[in-house]
Length: 321
Length: 255
Image (cartoon, rainbow over the protein chains, first blue to last red):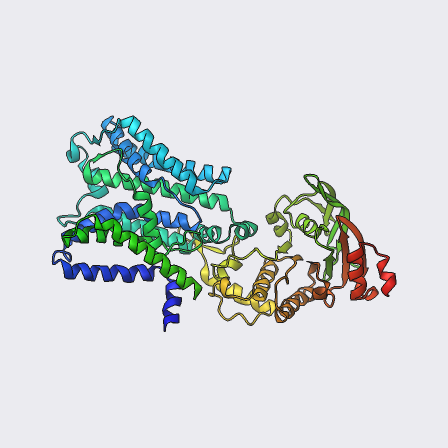
């Protein structure tokens, strides 16, 4: 019996995350009668979406054997660039493209340095994280920025990014989150790029021997992560109409935590995009649920920390069976 | 006399200050198993990697079916029918058999503008290919390679080069770290290669693995070809003596 459970967890790494998610939902539902309402879930999905839309591609990158610690800084950069572009009077679509391009550029830079200089992605992206954050603070002098005219300035654009869906408390960002997960799940399991992603992270030498273009695979994944971190910054602006240079501090670790809870190994080769989806959702559920349950918000970090450790222990034990 | 499928002439290769190969010749005929033997550091693997397009020689020529070739990558060599099976690498343990089998050479199908993996076709092909090499022991092609034995892994790798139409197969120490039973399985696969008129270059320093199956031995020592000998003309002990002394005279003492 235990063997069967272990095997299925090994085959479907997201099962453990899914079960913990359900357990946590049940606990919060008992603790607070406001937990199972649409407005609560609107909030969970909205915060989950901004984290998850980065965490899901981060899972892809981790499967190919790399980290990206610069996503939090990229998220802030994108938001600030987007607002700057809008406020300079550029067309909203152009502003959007510039902001996403800034993220893609960061991803391309990360990937190029990692692959050409053969430096571990952990170090490279740590450097880029600090570099970008510093530059952002210099540029803004530490002040936040808001879209001139707020929501009314670009109602359609903001509505599409992270506005309410109809009259429900749900936001469109949730749709982008689900869509991103669906697309990347498809890529991972049904395309050559997905196959190569697993192979590169699993055994880079063997993959190269068999003709996998391992550098290209990793570079593409870095660019996807950078771009999606930028997209997440856009969602934040779509929700708040403002951004500040210290936005997303600590987010890089939350994305990694989501991916790990969802079944990614730090060493690459294993993981699940859908698992990271659940991981991100689980984290925002805990964040909102604790507030609803009346617990001090500080518990959030402690709780997530515990979850990550449990997830890793479970994974390690499963691999040995 | 058949034409050699591979002819390597006067191959030289230097790595920094180390002269790995000094004017080595090698000929291999279709349906022949050549044991490329020699002690550690003899240059066996370097010679094989030059043939497989991993390294390019500093000097010397390679002819394939009489035509001069120059491979700048393993993919080029593979496209011309030269496949290499390494001892340790070549499979990703965390991936299943089918995905490993077609790694880097996936079968794709078009769905509208998208190119996606044709998983069903790949599974069918893997089953067929593994039957052909005679490894019925593999129960489930969805199994991760990590759960397979060393012998099964080698068999899959050999099955793979066969499937991709290799006419020359280089096996680099395929039996290191295999149990006695497993060695038998891999040898059976090697014999099947011979039956299908494939030229096999078998690299090893343990001649007990290959003596029974090989037709001819080419002996290298410190980058120089000591000589070559047909199996009929030498005993196992004689061969070991040549490898140990690096001199062909050793034959006379034992035979």
